[in-house]
Structure formats: structure tokens, C-alpha cells
Length: 467
Ligand SMILES: *Cc1c(COP(=O)(O)O)cnc(C)c1O
Image (cartoon, rainbow, N blue to C red):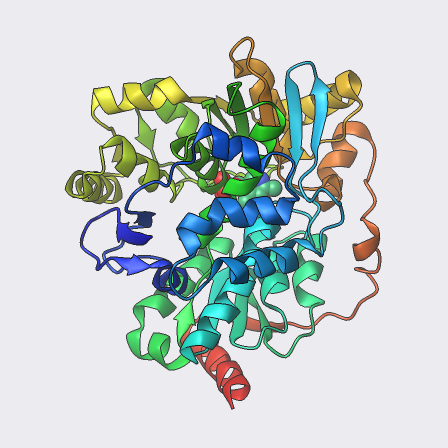
């Protein structure tokens, strides 16, 4: 499989090039040049496979052919999903006649990002080994992504990872999940500033070509195609369990950067009858406003009880736009340039209508989210954290009659104890694997939000590890 940019001005690459590059050099996102399609018989033959085998089968057309063989991919999937706490890896829990929670939080850091990142860590090592190269992965986090990325890269032979978090602005669970990993190849930097400062610093490092080349900078943020690929298999597993390809289904996904719901849509492109995509948001509801009235307008980020969705611009939306513009990269580049310049995006009316035939938006503010957590516990006896609760509420409000709905349960309730206590008076306990999180020593470096200081720190760290 080869990949091209949504903006059409980057050289096409194979999977390993896409994995290492992340963003395309024209500012666009890599997309597969065509969608692999499985026949109904091929889908049926995947029913009942263990999750790691299913995942390898679904990802094979995206990943294999160059540096990664199918046998390699199978071995990496087994290793990636072995540390999960549930034998089914992604269990599907029935809440109501036609409503199912797809639990994606049984991995090492208790959020769905582990599914793709545990595998991405393996893929990085494998591809770098074949090329005899090393990289330094640099990222900014407000919480979930950083811990999942560190957990995926700890102790890998060819990867160093430096993660910037805003000092004192992540939850204690989130911080400790990062800072108690005492591996030689992990550097935690607590920046005196906000998450936006952290993200700006990472962008500035990417723009600093001598620095970028010296440390061989790379990224694992959610625009990396490997992240999307690693999220397709669980939607496939759930749809097959509910009767696809012989029965249509719907999905409901609490959405921030649009990566998870895009992975579900990819499964549809591959031939599964997922007939409706319900997109849940918190008060940062730019996507649901777009779906309601074709008006995508940037506003300031509002802090909510579902912090992993406190995002204004959903980067992965560009991939969907590109597809609905019939893969017209020139038109995509133009719309994205206008959006950047004006803070506003309106897509051509027929394109918007086509998107609306598949996608429905839904948003809840914090009070409604907490009320929903209470209602879900009352109605189903199910404990849902704030992001998951928004997805379940969206499924209840927007699901077409007669279609079973898969609601993505994206995090474990123990990650958000304050919100859970406010909603239902319970602070959910951490699973056994994290029971000692509060006793373990932490290690992190403080730094001012100044590019030169942080580059020096990372340079020293990367050089130490490459000798
Ligand atoms: C990252 C995250 C989301 C948002 O997912 P996107 O792929 O960015 O849309 C939702 N819920 C939780 C718990 C997350 O960590």
C-alpha cells in the first residue's frame, strides 16, 4: 500500500515512511491511495478470531508488503495486546436491547489510545531496526496521550521519547502515569505554562530543521496514520460480533481529534455495513455545529470534565473532508488554507449533505454529562466516565431505530475520580496493575516555556542514549 497527502504536494510513501514522518511535508495528512475491501465471505471468516489475529488480518493491507511481513505483524499484535487486563482485549458489554459499550480501556494506561500506541511502539522499533536508525519521539500532552505514548515506548531499543506536559495542570493520575516510568529512554518535561504552550514548543522544534535532524525527531500524535490503522480492528471486532456483514450497525464515538471515529469510518470503506456515525462532543462542540448547519468556526477552548475532548480543531477531519471531496487534494488544500486564515470553514453544500447522510453530531455540557453518568448507572448499572457517558448519551439520543449501536467506552472511570465523585459519589478504584501508582517515585524535569532551554534538555538526553 502506498500513501499520499490530503494536500497532494508530498511524495507518496510506503507504510514505514508514513509511520516515521507522521505529518506530510506539505502540511497534509497521509491517506492510503486506495481502500482495501474485504468480501462478505472474508469478513465472516474473521468471526471468532482471537483479537490479536483479527487485528493483524485487518491491518495487513495497510502495513505489510515492505519492511513488515504478515508474520512480523502477527507477532507484534500478540505482543501489543498481551499486557491487556481482559482476555478479550476489547470486550463488548450489552447495556440495552440495541446498545453496547465497546470497552477500550483495559490496556496499560486505561484509555483507548493504548490499542494503537502499544502496536505503534512495536512498529517503530521494527522499522528502525531494519533501517539501522534511531528516533527521538517528541510530543505534548494534556494527559492521556503522553502516558499511553510513554508506556508504548519505554525500554524500546531504538526510540527515545520526550513528553512535555503543563506543570500542575494534568490530573495526578495522569501525571504519575508518565513520571513514574523510570526508563532510560523516557524524558518527562514539566513546562511552566499551559498545554497550548507545550504544543507550540513542539511545533517550534519541528520547524527548527537543524534541531529536528540532529535528534531525528519523530511524533506519535493522532494524525499519524499508524494510530488510525491500529484503531480499525476493534470496530471490526464489535461489528462482526453483532452480525455484520449480514446486519448493519451504527457507532457512537466521543470525539476530540476525530481519529477514533475516522477509524470506524475506515472499516465502512473496507466493506463493513456501519451505516451511521454518531459524534459526541462536550462544550467544545465545533463538530456538532458543523454537522447541524455547515458552520465550522473556531472558538476558544473551554475546560471541561472530559479533558481529552477539549479541542477546537479536529485534525483528522481533514482526512474525511478529502474523501468527501472525492479525493480532490487541491480543493482540500484550499479549504484548509482558508480555514487557517479565517478561522471558519464551510464546505460545498452537496459535500456537507453527503457527510450528514452518514454522520450525526451531539454535544453535552458538563452539567448534562454528570447527569448522564448518574442516569447510565441508574438505568444499566454501568459506571461510565465522562467521555464514555457522552458517547452513550449520543447513542441514546441519535441512534436510528432498529440498528444496534456500538458506543466506544474510551477510558476507565478510575482516570477521572473527581468527576465520578461529583456525579455518583464514588471514587472508582484503580485496577490492580496501577494500585501502587501513588507510592512510586516520580521523575521529571521542570523547564520554562522557552524553546532554547527545552531543546538543550532534549539534545543532551538524545545524545546520551545514542552512544
Ligand atoms: C483521546 C480521547 C478521546 C478523543 O479521541 P479522538 O480520537 O481524539 O477523537 C476521547 N476519549 C478519551 C478518553 C480520550 O483519551
